[in-house]
Amino acid sequence: MLGAGPGIGLAVARRFAAAGMPITVLARAGKTVDAALEALPHALGLRADVTDEPGLRRALDTAVDRFGVPDVVVYNVGLIRRDTPGELSAAQLADTYRVNVGGAMTAAVHVAPGMAERGRGTILLTGGMPKPDPRVTSLSLGKAGVRALTRLLAEEYGPSGIHVATVTVGGPVEPGTRWDPDAVAEEYWRLHSQPPDQWEVEVEL
Image (cartoon, rainbow, N blue to C red; front, side, top):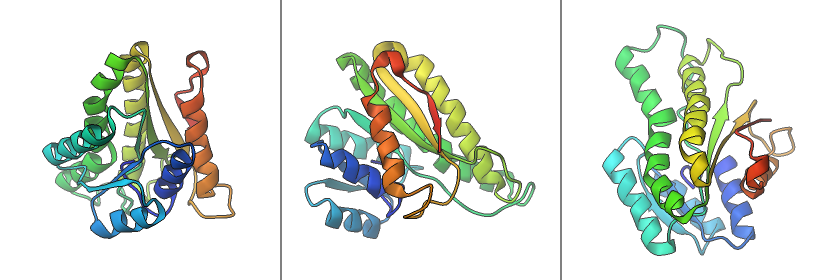
């Protein structure tokens, strides 16, 4: 689980742990990792910055060394900020894209060969912004990139037995709402459990 905050990340980790799966949580902030481990005491907690490609690859290798090639990798990392078209410099916009899309690419292509060799695996990416919004331009661009990346990865790795999909969350994640984190987590589990002839590439909530 890349991105283990108190919303979707932790809910998804709990859902997969409840099914008896070993869990690794990766986050940039130590306090986020510590909070996740309080809820998931048997999980492996690792610090990793998704924009640090060598560091992210090392963290993923540590998880593989501990638990073997993962059955599921969930990328639930995003840089959420309010910005309008032209407000960010090109460099700033590129920095947001490195978080929203670049880290997802790094994680996916790092674990996919092992999954392909085994003949099965699931890679799930958290999406959002089903409709672009100029008030959150960088996030709109990033989540559009996540959807495109999901389809590219599905085309590339699907024939090797890897299910790649994105869950596009259409609003703020809050308990008791349409986007209750536990309900969202159930969609991740449902996607992971789908037989190959029923694979979906994108689910919009």
